Length: 433
Ligand code: PA5
Image 1 (cartoon, rainbow, N blue to C red):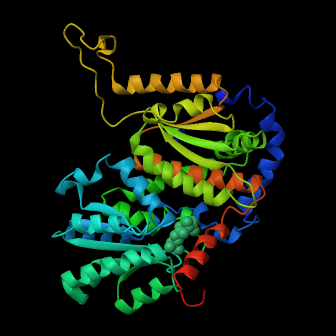
Image 2 (image 1 turned 45 degrees about the horizontal axis):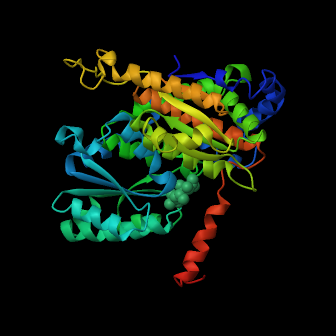
Image 3 (image 1 turned 60 degrees about the vertical axis):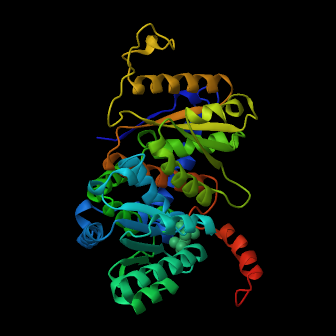
């Protein structure tokens, strides 16, 4: 059974009933290119088959278990696709406050190497002082500056604390099989190493050791996560557009873009989806934004942002559409208590659950934004289970790749990311620049 359901009805009025039908041959052609591996960037389609849960190398779980036993703090060092999926998994599957769960919740997990901020890294060093630390440095290219700087600092700390030999037991590298400075360093130092397959790019790598090891360290059942992704593969490789929601979503996005709705806001009513939205922004932005084309991916967290961005969304430039990411069922239910004499006038809500109120907030928002000229659609996630998350990751990977093909770009490269690096390296006098 699917862990996701879709509602495209609020697109009526913006996209005619026939639009998807008209676009259907193009969608079909793109779908076939993806299936047969004949489109641009087809050397990076390894993510399409996430593999059966039984095929997970037991080594990931073994190493995760030994890291859990060994450390109080686990630091993931990486940037972009090398950390965002794991962070999304932790927040969605564990807790809004994952580091406050105590010993039973596993090690505290922090992320580093995704900026060059002195204060961020100093704060982290202060926070972990006196605690037992393990590191997972992740970089597919093995040459990315931000994680390399952070790793140099953290490696020094770990070596000082445990000695060079002791540090080896506490550092795991996730990188390319044979290339890059990190690979060389890992081999020289004798670190435990996990390989990122050649045919999977950074932002599509959440279901490889890149995302799986940190999630397993946190105690997440990665076999169930893969089972969800496998469900996604079954559903979203279906040949008929009308039975394949990833194709439909890609088709609607493309039609909206062609009509001038050039920004998509991924909006949720759940803070546990905050980092998921960050993961999605990278996936969509780096995959689709090229050749002076592409939907700009933005995110909002409601109802919080209804009190900041809500005015703009309701009434500003009409270039946006919304994709609501809804959670059908919270893990736990909280009821609003009755209060004697109703001093705050809230007794009309007494006895209702927060989920019920949040649902009405969504319905009210979707209607208001629709009336304000913002087309919207919704994707409902059954629950906060690893199976649901696995399917969700897979759904968006598939749909984003499809939208890229529909817009005539290669969704698997990111040439634009090099430009800031060249300038920065030149300004820093890096040899060769
Ligand atoms: O999707 C991508 O390829 C990028 O966003 C990378 O994930 C990011 O730049 C980090 O690269 P690397 O893992 O090589 O350090």
